[in-house]
Length: 396
Image (tube, rainbow, N blue to C red; front, top):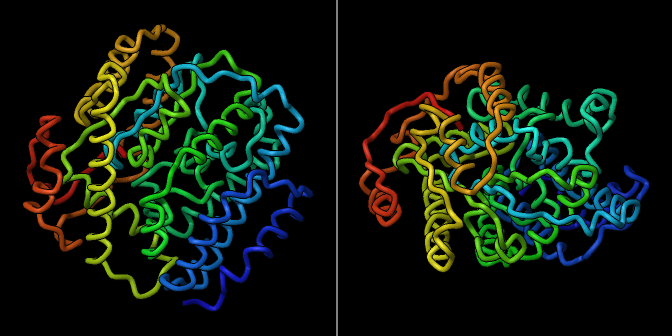
């Protein structure tokens, strides 16, 4: 338990967010249950450093400000609610299965729109890109990213984040305080237990509300979403986006689980005291086994044609060809302009640009045979051979 009391500061954090934006409408108040559970767990379970307390306060404050901006945007542009989000592409793979590389490449298609990091944090109708460099919200977002990498410089080699690039949907889920990333940043088992049985349907409705606002000026462009959190409640995702075109990436869990541990541990380093590396390895294994198990059960209830399965090796070896096959499968035109833009982006962002990501299974006290057993049904369903890999250079 740290010096700062999150639970006792919930009202104060709302007041601070309202004063920062000069707004007071936070929208549907149902999000407060999740926020209260998170704050209670931070108070009772977590062991945050002073930097960690500041960082978690900032995460909560940013999410509250994003709620205010979303509501204000819909008041200003009420017609945004009528925007139809038809057949969005949704990438749902486990972490460290090539989803970020795939996400960034598909987003280069001029007929595609994705959720840029800065607009997820400060939702508004997407301005013209040539105006971003003078936008105060964009500049603040870029500075926030710089601070993240200053605090954990090794993160750049593990997971690429830039204010102008597409980012994961959890940044919108944060407005409802319901997603898996809090478990990556702090030890919050009581919150995690609550979130495990949380109905994500209201979270996806909020997601849609933001998407309609951000894409207000370009409703003709197809949407692209990506997040590992989508694994946990496919039924909720499809309740809000029933015609989603789902791309599921796949990789040997014996390689990806220690990679996830390494990514999240790096983010945790400056934020937490008394960290238990073996315990974190165990909780990470449990979390993502639950995610993939739930996905398999939910996916079995859906039409098989709604899913495109993509092995990690195909993303690494020939991502452009893989994307062409995705487009063909979902009957989307793959234009020369799109292919050229993707190839240009790949040349400008080569694999290993920020260094290599090194990790091992043993440092998390995890056992290869146990991972094989826990993920056995998943591995057999998707033909994933397992072979222990001590370290790797990889796409995220």
